[in-house]
Length: 287
Image (cartoon, rainbow, N blue to C red; front, side, top):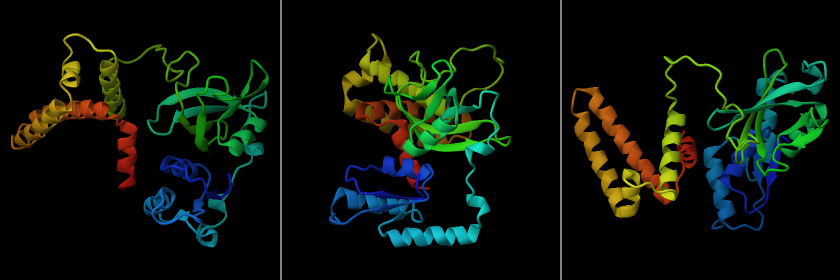
């Protein structure tokens, strides 16, 4: 990927801008000729400039000047790109590559790369591997449509394993599971696995499933059946409960009330079609 990426497509979204910048591009230039300041594309430029002030430009020369100055300040070593010949390969000339969801951090799969697949990944932005069974290149999702957009590639300290942070479309596993790592072998029962992202996503998924597949006696379905006004009423009530609980010296009560609020907020999110990914993007924008 080039250090500077020119964006001219009016259908470009902020997710597209982030994917480019989280990849290998150092900055982007918006081709705004012909677009007035009221156009969505110009507004996207302004929004992106606010979010990435040192990486978004509307004039090519400004982007080039930024790259020159940052290179002068940091020196050549920090921007050095490793060639495939520097990687430590196995006896078949391959290097293992672990794919990880760039948002959740979940490990999705492991496959192998050779030099050709590595270069094609860099050229196309889509994760491409070497199939040992078929002895050919395969771009993940070429048959299933479950593509992996490359966000970044990271080599480990021994240079013998690549970590690919990806934007996964659909499930990563050919079985239909979100990740290939779904078969437990052993685990310690006393380890707390209450990862906040996983818990929130799991509860959200259950709520979303209730909306599509109602269950008799389900409180969640009761809220959906009553409609938006009832859901909003409950969200408001839970906010009040948090305020009251905060005046109580017992921390246990406020934890309980915040959990209640988050549940009802997720019911509202599902009702309005808002996802945790969108909430995370909005929070990241405010950094």
